[in-house]
Structure formats: C-alpha cells, structure tokens
Length: 305
Image (cartoon, rainbow, N blue to C red; front, side, top):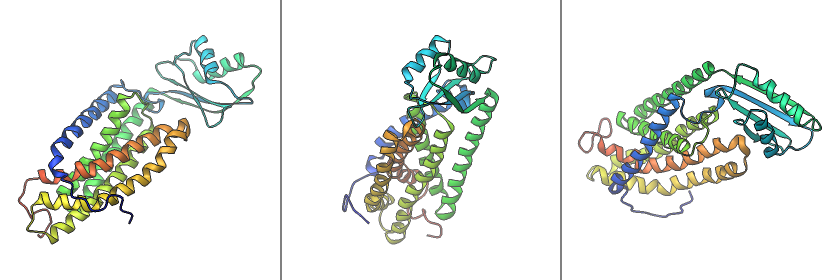
C-alpha cells in the first residue's frame, strides 16, 4: 500500500470539539436545505417540482444565447437551456410554475420551428412531469435514504457493536446533509441524479468508516491498558495514509468528470466529489470521536471483552 504520509501521531481526538463545531454548522445547513426542499422553496429539478423537458437535435450547431433570446421573446424566459453532448443538441427545461395548462413541449417546438426555420431539428425526447408525480418522487427518494441509513446501522451493529453502527450512520448522515447544504447554499438544482449521488456517497462513506472502525477494534483487543482516546487516535493514525490514498484515487477521477463531463454529469460528479471529501473528513473527525461520547467505561466497546 502506497504511503504518502508515513507514520503519523496526530491528536485527532483532541481536535474533536472544533471538528464537531464545523460539522454542526454543515448539519444545520443540511437540515435547512431539507426543510426548504419539503416546502418546495429549494431549487428542485422537474423530477421533484414537476415541469417539462424537451431535447432537440438540430442539423446545424445552435448558440444557447440566441435560443434564450428567442424563448424570452415568446414568453418563455424562465426556461433553462443546456447543450446536450454536442453543439447541435439542446435541452430545454421549464418548471411547473412556468407552465400553464397548454402543452409546453408543443409550444417550445413551435417557437423554434418559427424562429429557426432554416435550421431543421427533430425532437429527441419530451418529458412532462406533473406536480403530483414530483411530490411522489420526493417521498420515494426520502424513503430510499431512510432505508439506506437503517441498513447501515444494522450492518455495522452486526459486524461490530450497536454504538459503532449508530456512529457510522450519524457520520454518513452528516456527509449527506453537508453535500445537500452546500447544494442549497450555491442554489444548485436538486434532481434524481443528485439523490443517486447521495445514496452512492452513503455507501462510500460507510466503507471508509468501516476501515477505521476495523482498526479500532483490532487495537482494542491488543491494547486494553490504554485509554479509549489513545486507542482511537492510534487507530486513525495507522489507517490515515490508506484512507487518504483511497479517497485521492476517487477524487482524481471525479475532478475531470466535474470539469469536462458536460452538463448532464456535472452536478452528479460534483455531489460525489464533495461527498468523498466530506466522507474522508467524517471518518476521521466525526465517526471515530463519536465513539467517545457513548456512555460506558473503557473496555466495553467490544462484545464479550
């Protein structure tokens, strides 16, 4: 295993109060984001808020600024435009608040047919999602996240001990809320693809945490005379290089995806990128210190100890 830091002796547990302060701020932002999402006040994609998405393929390249001016002139100024893979492909999205009772997809097609008559196009896809379906998707996404956290607690509790499972679940919940809060603060659109990234992040974060917990368990069996704080500190330092190398490998893949992966993959890759960073931080500064907060004397962290 490549070691980029060598042997370290950093007092991570001694810095846990500052870590908890920073994490508390991120969690509060995430909770605010959740509340705003529930109220429909966040920047929700049409998957959740309802709306229309039309993908057009032109014979010749089309400039987004020209397309936006045309839509604004025809009363569709709130449309979101994205180049879809190629310069001659355009994705037009309008949220439910913009739509009236008419078929917005037909109106978009009519506008482009009229204004770009010399540049023939075809409709690659057209999707319309009503507000009711959007609300149902919100509920389904929330249920999926709750089930994933319940699975995390059960798995880690079965493999280690109950408080390990709860600490891992809290750390993972922290990571998800941190990413969600960052997306809300930056007014990033929250779509089903972002929710998929959050669920993927939950799995990655737990894996990172389990590696640290496994070393803590080994040290608890071998170093019973030391304090829990010392044992946890030593365990984190022992796996620190491994944790950073693993995360760095993933980050090096996600950075080019975020920068050059196109509009479709950008938010998904960005959520994963932030999630990996927060996940690495939480496995060291959140999950491990949380074990010290559990009531109980030294030596009770393992069943049968």
